[in-house]
Length: 322
Image (cartoon, rainbow, N blue to C red; front, side, top):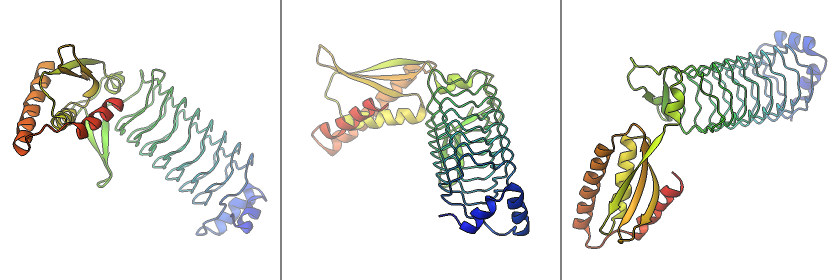
């Protein structure tokens, strides 16, 4: 529950509240779970304030200072946060549905699992901000700065990124669709993964620090055109060797994905995999059979029987979840 004394001072108006904050600069106000719906808080000094689970839907926060504020699970539905300072704020699991965050400062803020569906983030500064598993679907992100932001597992279905800067962002497991607008994105390079132990982005693309993406190239990197390669097995398959060989290919060629498992009329088994359009089919096919035969021979030396059923389920799971 909110500190009643702190809440009482806030209800006396922003001017009184800001004066009180100036007199007590080291005090951390507690407004946890307060009801501030549709409340006028323009220009309020809310830096470092505890606002977890606070109801701020439709609140007027234009120009407010929320530096390092704790807004965990706060309800900011359709709140006006235009030109707000939210740098280093904690907004995990916050409800920002249709919130207006245009021209706001959110550098190094944490918005993991927050709902920013249809939010207005135009011309916002989101550099080094974490959006892990956040929902940015149908948000307006035009002209925003996402440089070095962490966008792992972020949903951006139908999101508008016109003229947004995504240089240096981590786009691991990004969820886009045909309506995601990326044609005019500014992105010199991006990262494909993140090391949680070292707190470091990995797998820069392009790999060389001296190479950069051409304008409009990002959309092709995220949604590459694919071709298929059929692998025909005339003898009984060692499914463990097959799965390990496919995983090895996936590490060397990121776009390798199993697509189908079919039995042919002659009794042979077909495994179809998809590859990036630019892939060298012959070299990949040769690499697969070299690795598969090596593993299969090693498996025969360890056992006289073919390892089948236990690993067939693992392969089928990969086919169902490519």
